[in-house]
Amino acid sequence: MKTFNFCKQTAFQPAKKNVFVGFICYPFRRREVFLDRREFLHKIKATPHNCVCAPRRSCLPNDAVLPEKTGKAGYKMERNEAWALLTKYNKDHFHLQHALTVEAVMRWFANDLGYGAEADYWGVVGLLHDIDFELYPEQHCVKCVELLQKGGVSEDMIHAVVSHGYGICVDTAPEREMEKVLFACDELTGLIWAAALMRPSRSTKDMELKSLKKKYKDKKFAAGCSRDVIARGAEQLGWELDTLLSKTLQAMAETEDTVLAEVAAL
Image 1 (cartoon, rainbow, N blue to C red):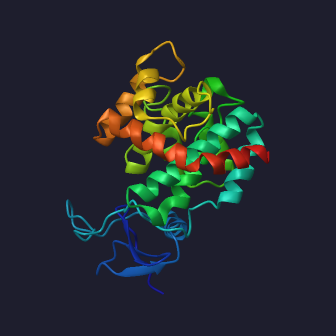
Image 2 (image 1 turned 45 degrees about the horizontal axis):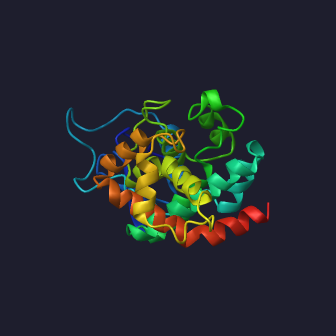
């Protein structure tokens, strides 16, 4: 049986739903179909990396990319698994409510921005984003790597979770649009909910943008919610600040009942 050597330069393209095509450096650039990304990477790691490509010649087709949308199979943690993992390290209702809020907001943004098929994935990232904060606040966005790896979370999800601390406690920058949304809305959801609790209704559903902007400009109000981070988040997304404020407020208003029902059931 002839053994082929793989090149480290590999990529994925979705062939069908939950099926991936791995581009591997064979002499004839042969393709193999794998059921998921994990299976593909396992085979790559188990094979000697002696590339047979000519020097300085890419072994990838021009259109071979690692897409943002990679489907469910092989890396996506189910929501019930993510919740079990989160509650293993978090018990405080305040932290759990924040996690549920960010989850709901991330799902809302996924649908709003045209990533509806990935809404579950965006939501799980939002749910897990502060997994290390309750027990390891001084190692926030650092300790999470160990906790998430132990929980079987994929590297792409771990990168997303870590990157929401960019410029605050880590140097890992948000890359995908999903990661930039998480970075932008995390602090903002805290500010919006704090503002809602000051209202007679104690709700976001009757809050207007102008009311939120007043609270945003008052640096003494909810001082722990960094305005600099929120502003940088809008900038990274290429949005006006008002757009970020308005969309996040709308997301929270439309998902508030669901989040509070989940909190009440804790």
